[in-house]
Each structure stands twice: as C-alpha cells, then as structure tokens.
Image (tube, rainbow over all chains, first blue to last red; front, side):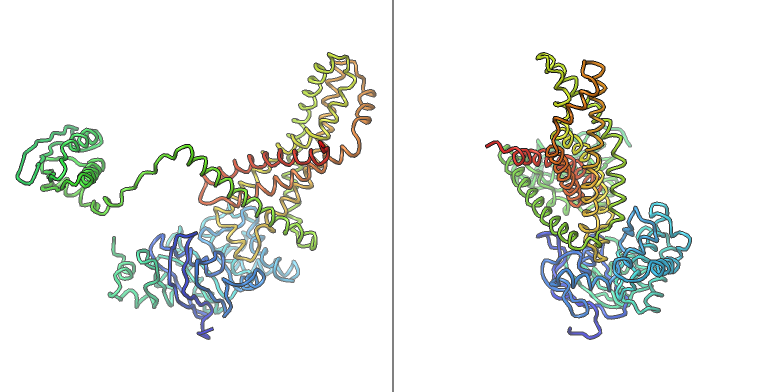
Length: 251
Length: 373
C-alpha cells in the first residue's frame, strides 16, 4: 500500500457497462476516518463508481485496494471478508420488503456473528434507536416514510459496525430538515466512531456540510477533474465544469 | 394561440431565394409549411428566411426550421434566417439549434427476415448459455447445501413451502378434479365403443400417475409460483435489494434461489399426490353416474393398473419439474434490468420457459423410463 493513511486506493480505474466506458483513468485514495464525497452532474457515473468501490461491479480495467488488498482480484471468500468491514446505504434504502425493520437489521448479524439471538436483537434495537426508529421495529418497509426507510437502511448498514460506510444519494427525495438530520447523523458517526464515509451526492448543501474532500467527476471528459475540499473547489475558477457545478451556474 | 394561417412570399435575390414567412407556424401549419418550404430548396443555392412577420412559433415551428436546415444541408444548399420577429427570437433562442442538428437520430432500419432470424438465433444462443451457466451455479449450490444443510435458510424454505404448496392446493385440486372428469368422459366415449368401460379406471389412473398428473401440476406451478418467483426477484433487482444482498456478502443464489428450489421440490410431489387423489375422486363420481362400473370394481382396477414403479416415476418427474421451474423462474427474475416493463417481460418469460422446460424434461424422462429401442 502506497499511502499508510488510506483505506481505499483506486488505481488507473476504468469503469463502464460492457464495452461502454463511463469513467476512465481514475486515481485517488480515501483516507481512514474521512468523509469523502463523490460529486458530479446527473448521469456522470457517481453511483456506478461507488458500486465498484465495494466490489459490486467488476471494472473494465484498473484496481481498487481495500486496506492494501485488491477487491478486484480477490476470491469470493476474501471479498466476503472485506464486505464485513463495509456497510452500504442504497439510494432507495433497498430494505428487504418482506422483512420487518428489526429483521432487516438483524440479518447480517445472524449470518456473520456467533451472538445469541437475544444479543442480536438487543443490538439491532439499539441500532434502530440510534436512528430514531424505536417503536418501529416490527413495521414493514412499505409501512414507513421515505426518510425512515433511509434511516432504517443506515441502521442495517451499521449492523456490523463497519469501518467504511458508503452512501448512495442519501438526501435524494428527503425534505430539507430530514436531509439536514441525515447530514448531522453522518457527522456524528464519523466523529464518534471514526467511520470512514464515502458519499455520492450532488446536493451542494450536504457537500458543504459534511465533506472533507470532494472528488469531482466530469461527465463530458469522462474522468475525474478535481479532488479537494469543497471550499477550494467552489473558488477554483481554473476548472469551468467544477466552478459551474459548485456555483450552481445553469447550462 | 393565434390564428392558424401561414403564407410564404418569394423573392429572388442575387444570393438565392428569400422567403418571407407570415402568420403562425404551429401544430396546424407545420406539415404544410415544411413540404412547401422543402420544395423550394435548390441544390447549391442559398435559402434565406425572413421570419419578421411570423406572429406565432411553437415547438413544431422550431422543428420545421431544424428539419429545413437539415434538408438544405443534405442538398448542399445554404440556409439562413435573416430576420426574426420577437416571438421567433425568443423561441429559437431557447435551444441551440446548431447543436441539435448534427445529433438528429438516424432511425433504425427495419430488419429484413434474414436479419430477424439471425438476431433471434443469437438471442436464443445467449439465452441457452445463460441457462447452462445458471444450471451449473444451481448444481454447485445444491452440492454445497447437501454438504452443509445447516446453512440452508430453512425459515425461508418453510415460508415458500406455504405459498407454493399449501396455497396452491385448492387450484391444483380443482383442476385435477376436472381432469379426472374429462378423462372419464373421454374414456367412456372411446372405450365404450368396444364395450370396455371397465378399463376406464386403468386409463385414468395410468394417465394421471405417469403423465398428466405431473404435467398439469407443473403447468399450474409454472403459471402460479414461477411467475411469483420471477416477479419477486425482479422487483428486488429493480429496488436494489439484490445489490444490497451482495454488498452484505450474501450470494443471492444461496439466499433467494435455493430455498425456492427446495420448497418447490418438496411441494410439487405432495401437490401431485393430493391432485391425483382428487382426480380419481372426480373420475369415480363420473363413472358411478354415467357407467355401470361400481366403486369396488373401480378401486380394484386402479390397484391393478398403477404399479409402484409408475407411482415413483410420477413423483420423480414432479420433483425435477418443480426444481427446474423454480430455478428458471428465479433466473428470469435475476435477468430483470431497468423498471416495471422489464419485470413484466421477465415474468412472462419465466412462465413460458417453465412450461417449455417441463415438456422438454418430460420427453427426456419418457425416453429414459420407456426406451423406444
């Protein structure tokens, strides 16, 4: 591993679907304990990149290292091991519709720990309470609001207390207050547990609230064009695409 | 919207033709305007438009301008808008028409018969490859499940067993009852001609135990549970639940497909036994009402006709049909990409593939159990 402080390293990565390249020549690393945002216009490949980072998709070329080990070239067992250290919150929550919130959260614990059923339930109830979902343990995902679904999904992502949390568009579809509380939750998790957090978003308010560094993906150039703090990017007039994005310039 | 009148005044200038357009260029006048204006394009000459008297221009009007420019370019004629009314200025300023023009889609050419057959053959080949790959994966999963049965999600198996088996019982029994009645009526009309109505129980029992029972139950399973499996997994695919499973390190095959295959494999032979019993009851009632075959004679004939080998053949068939239907339906669910339309398409494909694979397997079993040579 080149950088001892980095938890994820991306090397010469080219991603896409089949032969269609979405992004190429991606090189960056995510430091331990930082809040790292992947930003860019709609359809630029942010979510696709995120899904590559936790090994859901195989890249066209290049490598992704998690704690120095390649996710791309790992076998099934090694990848499963790595995934225990990662939690993912998908855009729509992706909660299992036929399971209650409690069952959704207990699922990874039941599969990957030797805890007693009592301890698993206590832990799951604690995780749900952490995200203000006490009293909703036995509700089905279809019976709760969009914001609650996101929080439940976060509780599930946190089930195994992972080292890295991935968020795909966490504020999408949320009202401003729910969005602000989710941002605060992200900051709290990072501050209290030291969890490394990688977020895909294009919500400027969220970016300026939570991000320590922002990776900007340029849809026209099909590659990353900036990596810096949000304030630096907002004032960087040398890169028109970044400037337009951070200053809400219309097309 | 203003009135829909549109007039073109022509004027020859040293650079080419200048057309002064007047009135409204909108949904009502667009088609006529385009054909009139297009007829005035001359190769190598410039076409100038004066839009200062156009008092209304909507999206269709803009489309006319874009298309006219494209037609001029195709015939190597120049194109210029020399003057614009305020309305046109505003509307044409909304989009950069120069940017739209080179990106006009080239419409897909209608494929001829050979291309269609070729395309369908490639699709079929890809589909078969996918089925073979999936069968391979399922076999590995089944082997792993045999080695470590405790890792099977038995709770999920039980839940699926209820929906696939118990909930399907009324419809299976109803259909099988009617099949029993139909077979008896048919048997009476054919065997009756030879005075052999006493053999109706043999006909019904053998047909049900060996062929019709497993086949009819499999068709019901494919239409009912197969469609449900495909739609369930397809919807999970759309709502990223499958991705969520993978992100947690779960193998969707082990997590979702295997319990369904096990449940279907257990439910189907049970459904077959229940269904066949009900079909025999239907046949007995019909026999007693329409023929002189008595109840003891009927039961005696059934006992004589159906051997243990025949009975197990039906059960073995039922088991394999069920496992294959469940597997292929789940595979179709996994193939869902995009949204609701894809879920519908894959659900339909699941039912069709389920029934097809059932008939295909039945043919193979018939050759296996009753070698023709």
